Length: 172
Image (tube, rainbow, N blue to C red; front, side):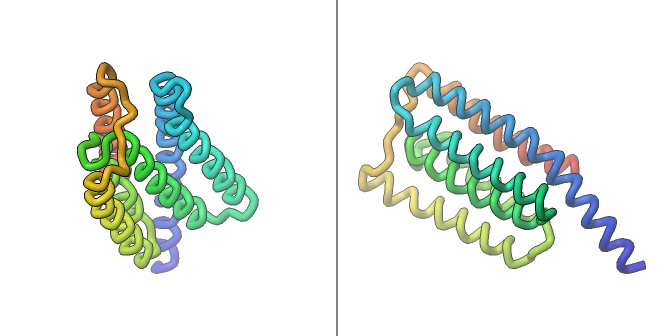
């Protein structure tokens, strides 16, 4: 009985993650294309998206060959945290509308079973948020988003965070 419930929970989590990965990857491709057209010759934005897609493809390959869902989840959450950090770094630092994206990795981590990873990702996200303040104060951040597109960037960033949180709330 206990084993069956544990197996059902694992199957439910697997379906949840696989159903969430596709929209998240599509959103990443969308942001990559958006930043490519937005930044023009500046490769900082879209190179991050391409890097994320490469890590994603690698994670999916490992998942398909070894069946390690935990590796897929850890890699996806870690790379998304890195990409969010870089995105916030180049969209205004603490003044960036993308600051809310730091809430996504801990929320994702709370929906799968290694409990120590929950605390790990909460700590990393908190460290990323706290590090933005001195980085912005010392002038290491910059806003590469043109003034005409800042509202669109804010809307897309907040919409992305809202969509991820709502998908998890409804699926789990």
